[in-house]
Length: 198
Image (tube, rainbow, N blue to C red; front, side):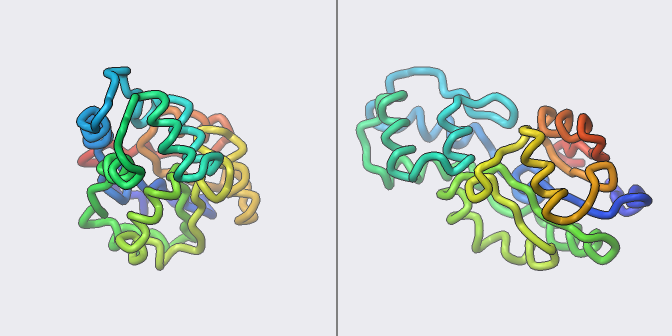
């Protein structure tokens, strides 16, 4: 998709990370959780738009790593170590898309660019060494686990636009989540929903 042709009247471009610049697969974590010792068979609601509240809470930074892993034990019956649970939690992470750096660089040459990601502290620790070249051309990176706000909460988008001094209707969001895109549109933001292979 040629975003560069759509930048008229746009003063800020907001990139999502997972599914847009960085390849992820929710099924990898669901399968890894299901394989952990003690798993009680409870359905694991963990996807791009539908998730159990515990996953929302860790994304907002409301749970420490240890509290998160304990909450998962209590919900899903896991009997393994924190390290084993973290490894399964981070199985979702695949790596940056091949064109991610070039794409961000081409857009940032024309407009200010920031990152806005729903991400937990463990995911951020594991991904950060691999995304540094992606975020290098950006003016700023906003992470839900450090903001205490998570998309699709409108306050999350408003925090970013206000921090950057841009009105929502002068900003553009690139995101793969239907819920996030709908929330941003409701604020008057320009939205491009990214689908795999787009």
